[in-house]
Length: 512
Image (tube, rainbow, N blue to C red):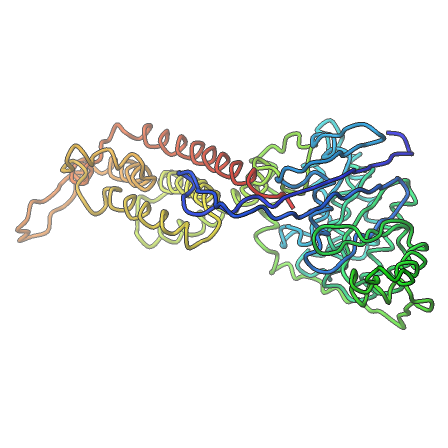
């Protein structure tokens, strides 16, 4: 793309979506008849390559709303024109030429900076990009953003400024010409905030256009911006233009007897940032101590990351709005590290149970015991993803998951004889993942038992064979293949259902 690019927006008006009440994910929700709330009111502006633009204003003025609207990362419908070099631009193109850094980014805290960036490079870059090219791009970003010292440090141990620079590095992996940042200095001290803005400033020197919302910046940070957009409550623009011209603009406003004065438009800190003539900050010393992690405390998440490539192939995922902004990417990014973790934990737990219960010994006996349990555990993760995607809160999800789990336990064959079930409830066992796993384990263990000794003076009916045990619980010795097939079908069906639910929810909310 050419170096000289301009993104302009003209007469942008955005209304808040109507409130909905009642209903569920299965039923239609009712829309309230209240009047629409105007979030943006005929906003126009311009962002050009090589410029750092700040969107400022009091809380509720529409800073983030404007940022997400012009980056086309909001689900609301807006009126007006959004132009790239004078031509209309759609969401598809905008997602490919821009990056968006949310205020609170998501990441797997157990990964190191290197692992996280390499993982995101595989997700965001073209699948045709070679491994060496990805490593080269990641290494360059690490050096440019000053992340070399914490390259092998876990994300959970990073400071706020370092985490924000990691988020910037993720969005810069595809080298977009536009970068949108939502309050990149929130929660940071003055030094870290200045470092982050200085990094954004360095991006503009490479010909990129950077727009970011910022709340009450220090005067030394404010001077790093080239342009400023001052928002006022009601979604209106009080001023837009070069930072150096803002003082004269508001002087003219205060000299106008018919004007209210700019003090009613912006916050006192913003006024100080504009009118200050002596500003700057200095830091006498800054020390960083990175603790070396013991080999005995290596988290299981790292092992999951190492082996995730064996189980899941990361396909082409180039058109991204945020890190996990699409339903498929969000779902894949979740179960990629969880799958090997589930297998490892199931192996450890089953090993203890196998030894305590004294089941059929030997490697073959252990393998026949752990295989159906592992498949059932993996299927249960798909069930968890599906329920989580259906509802937003844990309390609401429990209203469905608890009854379903109860039915699954009851009809697994442990508590009742499945052969005695009436016709209208007999089918319920086929929706129980515990039924498939329990029957498979029982077949693999009891089908090899040819004789069972009966104790003396045993008054009840004595079962003398393993097949008799299977019959008692309503299991069939020829259903082993059917049980494994049932678990596999449930795994893919639940993941697909979870993807569809997540996709539906993603369409109804902004991606930031």
